Amino acid sequence: MASQDRVIIFDTTLRDGEQALPQSLSERQKLQIALALEELGVDVIEAGFPVSSQGDFESVQLIARTLKHAVPCGLSRAVIKDIDVAAQALKAAEHFRIHTFIATSSIHVKDKLRKTFDDVLAMGVAAVKQARKYTDDVEFSCEDAGRTPIDQLCRMIEEAIKAGATTINIPDTVGYTVPTEFGGIITQVMNRVPNVDKAVISVHCHNDLGMATANSLTAVQMGARQIECCVNGLGERAGNCSLEEVAMAIKLRSKILGGVETGIIAKNIARTSALVSKICHEPVPSHKAIVGSNAFSHSSGIHQDGVLKNRETYEILTPESVGFSGNTMLMTARSGRHMIRECLRKLGYADDEYDLNDIYARFLKLADRKGQVFDYDLESLIFFTKLDEED
Ligand code: KIV
Ligand code: ZN
View 1: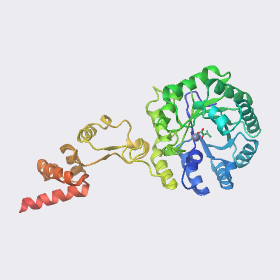
View 2: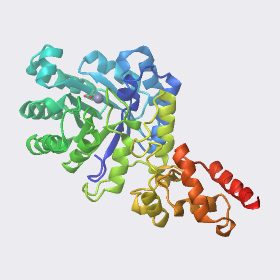
View 3: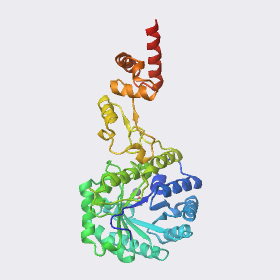
View 4: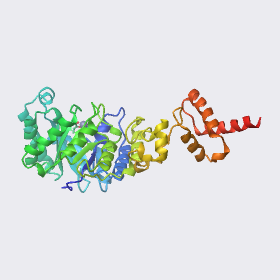
C-alpha cells in the first residue's frame, strides 16, 4: 500500500471523460492521451470499459501493453463476463487493476437495477472475488454512494473488503453532496467499517453542484487516499473532479490538507490540458481554474499595479509552475500608468522617449473606444504622437 501521505491520482479521462464526449476517440488518440497522463505522473489510468465495445477493448489492450509506470485499469459492471473481458484486455500489463462497480443507493437498487440490496451485496462480493482471480489489485465502487444510506454503504464496503477489494471507491455519482456531508460519509466509513485499513479509500466526485474539487479535498482530510478525476474536469454531465485543481490544491495547501502529496508533475499540466482539449474537441473555459486562458491574466489597474510590484499580491501560484510561459496583463481602460510604462519598456521604448502623461491620456481614449488595447496599438500611439510633435 502507498505511503500514508501519498494521495493516489486515478485518472478517468479515457473512461468517464470519454463516455461524455459527443464523438468517441480513436485508439491512437486514446494512446496519445494515456502516454501524456503517464508523463504527467498519474498513478492509475482508467483506460476504458472493455466489455462495452470491441473498440474500447482494443484501446485498453493497447494502452495496457504500452504503459511503463502508470497502472492500467479497466471498468466492469459487477458481472462475471465483464470482469473476464476486462482481464483479457489488461493482461498484457505486468500489473493491472480491475475496477468493478454496482449501485448501492435505494433509488438505483430499486428503480434502475430492480433488485434488492441483498442481491446487490451478493453481486458485488462475487464480482470482487472473480476479479481477484486475475489480479491482486481490485477496486470496488458503490455507485451513488453519496445517496446510499450509511448502514448499507458500510455493510457493502465491509463485504467487498472481505472478498478481497484493495481499493474501495466512494462515488458521489450525481454530484449531490456538499463538503461537510461528503466528509462525514468518509469519516463514518473510516470509523465503522472493520478492516478498513486493508483497502485504500478512494473518492470519485461529480461536479453537478460545482462541489467536486471541494468534496474530494474534504474526503482527503478525512482519510481518503485516492482521488478519481479527469483532465479539464471532463466527464458525465457537469464533469468529474478536475485533475489539475486537486493536484495544485494539494501541492499548494498540503499542510492544511494533512501534509499529503501527489506524484503529479505540475509543469506538465498546461500541455496535458491543451492536448486533451484539442483531441477531445472540448475547449477549456477561459475562467477555468489553473488551465483557463484567463487563470493568470490581470485586468484591473489595481491588480496590475500590485502584480508589477510583487506577483504574489494576486497570484497564488505562478503560471510557470504549471507549464505556461507567463502571466498576461490585459491593457484596458482599467490599466494604470505604471502598467503602460512597463509594456512600453518591454517593447523597447526608453522612459525618456515619450511623455508618459500624454501617452497615457491617448491610451485611455483608445481603450474607451476599443476595449482591449494591444502592443501594436501602443506602438501606433507612440508613432502618431511623434508625428504630432513634429507638425
Ligand atoms: O460516477 C460513478 O459512480 C462512476 C462509477 C462507475 C465509479 O463513474
Ligand atoms: Zn463517474
